[in-house]
Length: 135
Image 1 (cartoon, rainbow, N blue to C red):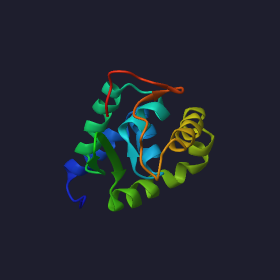
Image 2 (cartoon, rainbow, N blue to C red; image 1 turned 180 degrees about the horizontal axis):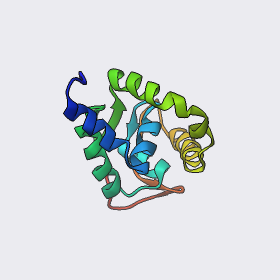
Image 3 (cartoon, one colour; image 1 turned 60 degrees about the vertical axis):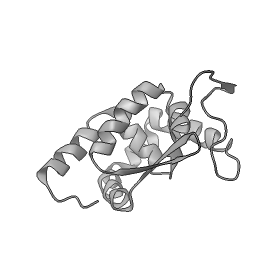
């Protein structure tokens, strides 16, 4: 993706204008994540996450792929570079921000459930499978 229009700028500004979208982008800075991993790590419902991912997708900074019943999201290489430069001045605040610290801890725990680097749990709420939900 090439960011070359004023609308691109507006879309990226819009995505960074919400704390939950900043949390999602910060989580994706760690690498590709499954929707259920994002929901569990950030303690967001699938519906809320989906709404925020629509705005993030509109900004053109993520790519998605399906693997079986799982949907994975990752920052595009161009977006990762751009986000890193935007977040750099705030790196100290990002390291100390209580919600982001909690998110990183929960994400680390959630990623430990992967098998061979792949999400295999689906939605998991503090160790219990959530019934009736797929990613």
